[in-house]
Image 1 (cartoon, rainbow, N blue to C red):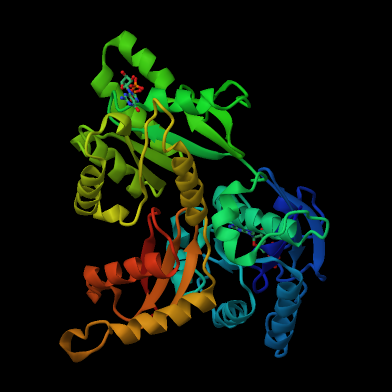
Image 2: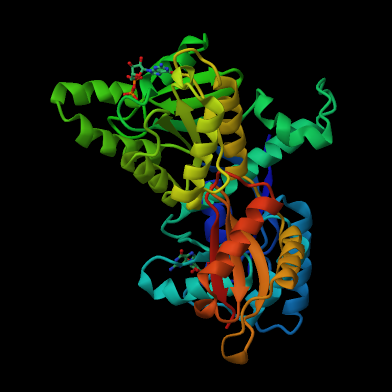
Length: 460
Ligand code: GDP
Ligand code: GDP
């Protein structure tokens, strides 16, 4: 399964250079003269493990031509129709021009998936242009240097969740499918789909003796499809790939590292940096608490770290088998959670027994859901409808008699979800208003357990 990416932008921003880089062959002519290349060209592109079709919309010869705007509009519209995703390039050195603004408007209206990139961003000369690009209302710009191959990782990070989404969509649309997917239950069933493109990366963190090794061993023990330990991303990080009831995942094995820690007799010290490394590795972090001593300093620190690093978080309370007053305890834990970790509001709290395996089904479901939420993309149209409602319900303050205006909102990124709001005086908007919006996003779009980033940008 593949998708189509159109590279759009005014002449001379570096579209052909990027096209060549993605296609890997020098198919297109590149020249300092604007618009040397003449046609809409297609090529087979690869970026990391992604394979897709790329369209280059070069083909406008003369930047001073009066009909340029019209032709560029047509060409861009054609590209939008052909493509699943548009990559909109601006020249970070030149800054945002009126032509860029015109194209951005078309893209905002016509395309569901636009990735904004400020090209020629190598070095600091481009900083101002990158910041200006926010004002286009197309989310956070990727800093790109097509010529030097910089920023391609960020492009990959934005394309990957979309690629997954297109793959899922294609699967759902495939005629020979024998699963009758009920539309409304799509979300609930997402975690039982056996065909996730790549394993999600999961880490179990928590204080020593919380039961991390036991939990991982129980999951592994129940699972016959263990493919064996392999070296993880960082040199001494060990991860194991498993298939947890049809959910492929790679679990960061802190247990293995703890053995090393014991030998070196530096348990406390190492377990903090282990946790840190595990969080960096993971997409979903399971914070495992000991029910008898929950929310210790170390637990709070690691949960906070996971939030700051932008990971999806699931809290599991272990040793539930020996908990005498389960109902009362659960209430206390929820209350403590809200109070001590307000930044993780809504994250799931699951009682488990790593030893008996009780509660692990629910943990698995919570992990799958958290991962999906972390990857979720809300359309710009939905967001702006929502924003209008939020503004009516509770208008922003008017310091000095001038009301702060929030004009436009778009999702800039996923993993975790990040949103840009165009705002008349971002520096004057109180923190409480941002919180109101973040909490509203969580509730309205069902996004518990994931950090949500909100960027206020001025539209000067
Ligand atoms: P197009 O008209 O949008 O297809 O732009 P081209 O790919 O033909 O590039 C226009 C000019 O910008 C060429 O001289 C490229 O070498 C240059 N260029 C492209 N990408 C970069 C970049 O990342 N950094 C710098 N400094 N120049 C670039
Ligand atoms: P780690 O340091 O976080 O890896 O913790 P371990 O997995 O080594 O477990 C620490 C201790 O807690 C061991 O004695 C385990 O047997 C015990 N333990 C782990 N999970 C459970 C559980 O669900 N219930 C009970 N009662 N004990 C558990």
